[in-house]
Length: 281
Ligand code: AHM
Ligand code: MG
Image (tube, rainbow, N blue to C red; front, side):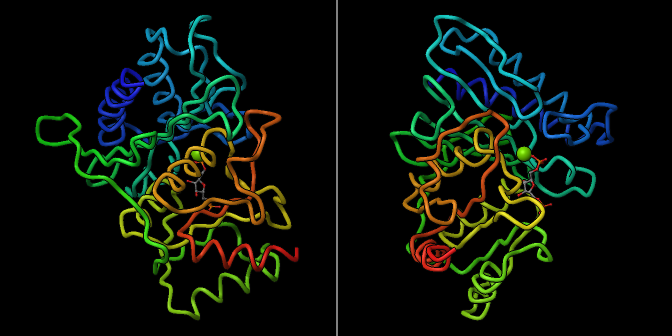
């Protein structure tokens, strides 16, 4: 596993340079979900693929930016599902973006996720790993290398509310849930990048991030393999919970690697409220 973390760190340094200095414009291509890819999406995907290619422990890669799985080493143990540059459309407005990695065994189901990692490219470059050692924060120092900072955990309740999805298309009960949090004093924190938004809640010790099913997109926007399962794993390891409204996200299967699901990540008290509201719908 350590060699996978090392490869992620190596690729993160290169991607951070690209974000800082290179063109953030669109390419001519679309990805499997139909989003027009940025040059940065395509190039980050390539950097990560090249960093993983020599690692014999990796059997296969699946990227948000690739149509299907990409085989590496037949005898490898791990399958890696990754989003090379999540929230990439925020690069041109100079907001934080991130890379997300799920390290799976056998298949891309939630129960087979063994470790999760994300990198935040913001004013600082940080990496969070989640595995049997818990959740750990690393940061790039002046020597351009990642250094361990501290362990991370969530309190049982927080103060931040990050509500995703187009409000016009929310179900009435979802609107009640979100309004309820604000009525209790929660503060809005939503940048439109799930990596910095979930990172903020984790660093500040609690809160709720939601991306529900809506009338136009009943299964939500966020992809299970590349985005949702890895963050569900991080939040659970940090002492929080992650559900689709009723069910634990990591109990969900995955029929197709680009499948999406409604998702809620947070500390225990907030997720209890989500369960109460969604139980009847
Ligand atoms: P992307 O993978 O195409 O960048 O999309 C994922 C991003 C997430 O980071 C974020 O939570 C969500 O899309 C924001 O969507 P919206 O613009 O609907 O709020
Ligand atoms: Mg993404």
